[in-house]
Image (cartoon, rainbow, N blue to C red; front, top):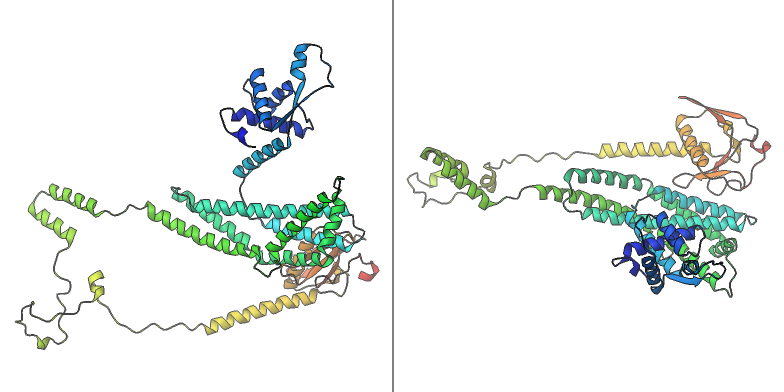
Amino acid sequence: MFRFTTGDRAEVHTAILRAFGAANERLETALGLDEVRARLRTVGWLDPVEDADLQERLRQLKGWGLLDVVQNHAENYRTAEEYERRNLQYSLTRMGEAALAGMEHALSVLTSTGALQTAVLEAIADRLDELCLLLDEPASPDRRIYSTLHELEGHLDALLANTKAFNGELQRLLRTEGADLSTFREVKAATVTYLQEFLLNLDQRGQRVASAVTRVERHGVSLLHARALRGAELPPTAGSEQSGDWLGRRRARWEGLRAWFLPSDGARPRVERLHDVARRAIVTLLQVLDRITESRRRSSSAAEDYRELARWFTAAPTDDDLHRLWSAAFGLGPARHHHLAHQDPELVPSSTAWAQAPPVQVSALLRTSGRTERFTRTGRVRDIEALKAARAERARKERAEVEAAWDFLRTEGPVRLSHFGRLDHLVFERLLELLGRALAGPVDSSGARRAVTSDGRIEIVLWPAPDGRSAVLQTVRGRLEGPDYLVEIGRPGSAASRRPRLDAAE
C-alpha cells in the first residue's frame, strides 16, 4: 500500500496521489491526463512532467492497486489524438484512499505536539451533562443526542492522543544528549510549570466526569446508543451488520471512557495515573539536569596532572623553587598528629623511642580534614505541637466559614438575585464563584444554565430575568449591580427542571 513512498520517483508518486486527494475534496472523482497535470500544480509540483512519464507513473500506481482506470464513453471526441488523451480517466481506489490518508496522518503526527489540556476534561464533562439533560427529555431530538455523543467521543480521542504524544515527547526530552545547558534549563522550568498547572484541580475534574458518567448510566447506555443510532441516519444496507458494527464501536468507546474515569472492575482510573506520570517527570527532569551539569565538567586525570607538574619542575629556575613546588604539590610536611600523646603519659618515659612506644589513636576526622572531634550537647528538638494546633484550628475555622457561606446561600426554591441583599464578603465571593460557573455553562432545553462547585456538593441553576430588573448586592467592600437573575442553589439534582414562574420567585 505504501510502496509509492519509496524509490527514485517517490516524490512524483506522492504528488499524484495528493492531486487526486485534492480533486476528491472538490467532488471530482475521476481525472484525465490533462486534469492530473493541472492538479499537480495546485499541490505544489512545479517540475515539468512529460506525457509518457506521467502515463507511466499512472500505470505504476494502477499496478500497485492505488488507482483505477476507466474509459470515458460519455465524451465526444473530434480527433484521434483527443481520444487518446481524454479517453482514459483515473480515480482513487479504496486502497489508494487509505494510503493517502495514512501518509497524511503520519505527516500530521510528525509535525504535531502533544499537550495536557484541562479544557478537554471540562469539555467531556459538559458533553456528558448535556446528554443527561437530553435523556431527561423524551421529546429531545435523536439527532442532537447523536451529535453530542459524537463530540464526546471526539474529545475523548483528543485526550488520549494528546496524552500519548505529550508523554512520548517528554521521554524524548529526558533522553536528549548534548543539549545546551541553558536551553535545557529553560525547557525544564517551563515543563515543570506546565505539569503543575495541569495537576491543579485534576482530582475535581476527574470526579466531575465520573459523576456525570454515573448519571448517564442511570438512564441506560443502551438507550443512549439506540437513540444515537436513529439520529445518525446511516444509509440503508442489506441486513443489520452495519448497525451492529456501529453499536459495537459505540460500546467500545464508552468502555474506554469508563476505563479513564470510572472503571467497572474497581481498578484505579487512568486519569489518576497522570498524577504519578507528572510527578515522576518532574523528578526525572531534575535528575537529567544534574547529569548534564556533571557531564559538562572536566573529568580529573591523575596522569595529566603529573605531566603538568613535570613541566613545572622542568621550568623551575633554582633548587629552592623546586623544594617549594614539591611542598606545595605533595604537602609532605610535619605530621599533623605529632601533638597527640598517650592517654597516660607517665606510663611512657620520654626517652622511649617512637618505634617502641605504644600506638596513639588518631581520629579519622583528623586524617581527612585536619580537625579533631568536639563533643557537645545534642541540640534541642523543636516543639511543634503548638504550631500544629494553630494550623488545625485555622483550617477548622476556614472550613466552618465555607460551610456557613454555603448554608446561607442555599435556597428553598427559585429566588431573585436581589433576594440576598447585603452579604458578608466571604459569602459574596462564594456567590460570585457560583454565578461565574453558571454563566460559563451551556443553556439547556428549559433556558437555564447549570453548574456545580469543584467538589460537586453545591449546584446552581440560573434563569435570565424576564422583566429586565436590576439587582444590587452590598458588601463591606462595595456594591455589585447587574441583571436580577432567577437562581436556585442547593444539592445537585434537587433544582427545578422547568423554568419557574415569576410570581413564585418573588
